[in-house]
Length: 195
Image 1: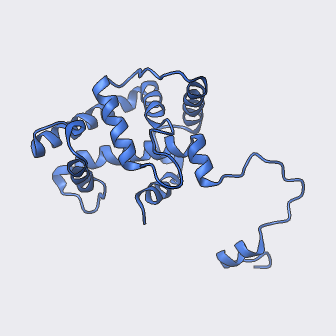
Image 2 (image 1 turned 90 degrees about the vertical axis):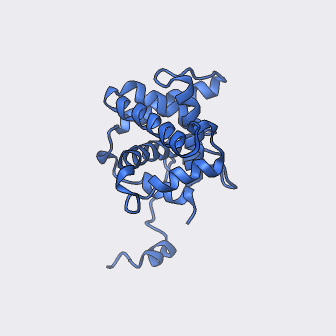
Image 3 (image 1 turned 120 degrees about the horizontal axis):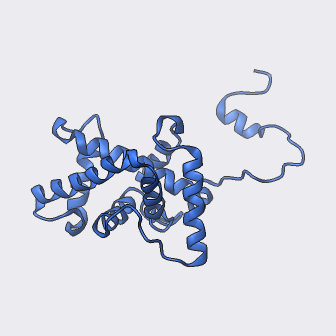
């Protein structure tokens, strides 16, 4: 399974378990989409310049550009993330602390901040924190940060136009007559209308 597929599966987790609400996500997605439509550059409200650079790299490691669509940065995820975190004071300490943890971990291992590490070094750190069940206990802060960051990345990507298009979402269209679920899909699910 590819990284993008894993993140997509994570994005369908119930939103009620997350710290942000559906209206928060919708509002952030609208603001980012409107800025991009106008060709305007987003000015971060929460992240420092260094943090914002880190966010750009990290979201693209989580959802890279592939044959199906662009990367998380292409979809406006860093802007989305800044908008959400700037608006939710309760998330700010964990976000800023997590980004600082990432730099500290990279400095301890490689003598440089995350943004200055090469791709192999960045991936080595992320591989150690991306799988909670396999992570060493001393990396628990990094694991907690990365889980939250990955969830917010997935939410930002799959609430963007690019992400919705990749999912093949066909909602918000008129269905003049509902004829039920196609037989092929019912068979794939192993159900039927008489069941």
